[in-house]
Amino acid sequence: AVEGNQAQIAASDYGNIFALQQTRSNLQLLADGYDAGAGSVEVLSLPQYHVSSPLSLQGGSSPIGLPSDSAVGNSLTQAGVPESLYVAAAREVMSNYLSSGADTLTWQKMSQPKEISDLANGKLHAVLLTEPYIYDAEASLGATPVLDVFSGGTATLPISGYVATSSWVKDNATAVTDFQSAIEQAQSDAAITGPIQQVLPKLPGAGISTQVANMVSVGTYPTSTSVGALERVTELMSTESMLSKSGIDIGAMLVRSH
Image (cartoon, rainbow, N blue to C red; front, top):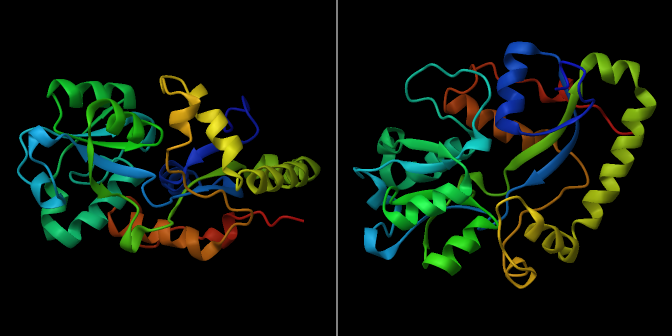
């Protein structure tokens, strides 16, 4: 949309941002948006499937459910290359348990409500979910965590940010400054959990009450952008062959706030 001038700024998963930047080189980062927190993205299963640890995932007869909106938008044709930043992070953590076996796991893209439905009816024995769907699966099905995707070496990893095209940034310096000021205030407000929990029940397909929303785990909304933190993302993507070994020059992408 931003490349086609249908939108000026996009909020996007960093997996998409950096994969596209490697082929387009015309995106600039205006602000960091959302960083992972403990329990904010998990692989879950049900007790009857006997998937109680990452070791139990290996050799499973069914794929692991994956949120379709997390899939990288460009074509990654190489066999074994993760389809999303979530898969890359999950494989990184799983490698502590499965070694290279983490690379052999298969994933199936679908909406998160369908992941929960397929987990319930046995079509899937494990699913990767974000909040508030994690709590939904736990409360409605008795699902239990198998793996915290952003833990250990992937803990606090940035997940999404705000980007625009280089040409738009160049021609709209005032709008860029206004946006950065507004988003910094919004990110600061988001440090108070109340407003976030009020929004969660309104997410399409979430189907949760305000009381349930108060129970979910959320990540953090940083008020500044760390080049070092974003380089952790590109290093992970490079390790998992989602980017070339040369990676991405984060410093060149970042638009400094005024």
